[in-house]
Length: 305
Ligand SMILES: CC(C)(COP(=O)(O)OP(=O)(O)OC[C@H]1O[C@@H](n2cnc3c(N)ncnc32)[C@H](O)[C@@H]1OP(=O)(O)O)[C@@H](O)C(=O)NCCC(=O)NCCS
Image (cartoon, rainbow, N blue to C red):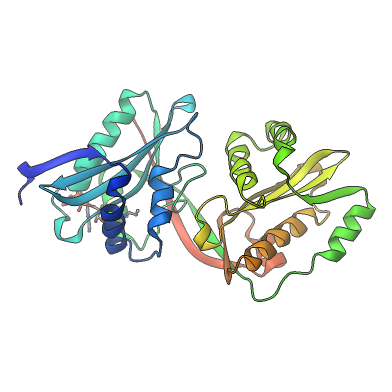
């Protein structure tokens, strides 16, 4: 099949099976279900702020490449999400073709900066695992620059964490520790407006929508002062986060407790391990939940002129 038979189009859910098959063949470091890819490519956690689509390259009837493109017009940011080309079709310019199309689309929409993989609230990984050597060679060739590293931690969930002592202590100090409730939307709006911003508000909303809500809160005088969430995405991986404690109440053991409440939830849901993605304060997780570094990712971005 030569390049004249190539077509580029936009994926829809009917393409899921073939996309999943292609990604499973190429992303050899990761294990994931069809449902997880469905979430990454066809579920938009913030349709009012993010626009997302997956571009496909076919040669004749055969799917040979996929590349997700996401943008957020409000701050002119874009993302190249999952991308891969079938092994037999690599080094023939297919990823380049997809990237040209994606970048043109982003440029047309006024996007200034494009990052790789770290799609807010819906990321497969927060950057590229450098062991996907072909991926990073491709990105560097195409003008993306590495600007940061980040890690995912893994925590074992063999035994439940003891939480009763911390709860009793904090309650005796006047705090309320509880699982979030459906009607907590306004409390969360106020909290995230004050402390951690829209992206984490969106993720807290995803956690709140789970049944039961996968969101634990600490409150003082009726206002949220700390939160921790899990299972907002990538549920099959036992995904923790995000979490945050207001600066003035740090160091009191609130974060430790909220972390452990989430890990206990994940354990009860049947997970043997939890992924603590895209951290953050490694010593905090290592100390309080014996987590260790599992994977390292390189973050890449480029500016569109
Ligand atoms: C990365 C990937 C998508 C590239 O697809 P591709 O269609 O082969 O890429 P292109 O043919 O457009 O390559 C463009 C340029 O990128 C660079 N490049 C691509 N693959 C490379 C490799 N394996 N080694 C070194 N450079 C490479 C080259 O400079 C290449 O130009 P050249 O062939 O003229 O030298 C493909 O190798 C792949 O699917 N890898 C596994 C999945 C992956 O790593 N995804 C990223 C994480 S989600």
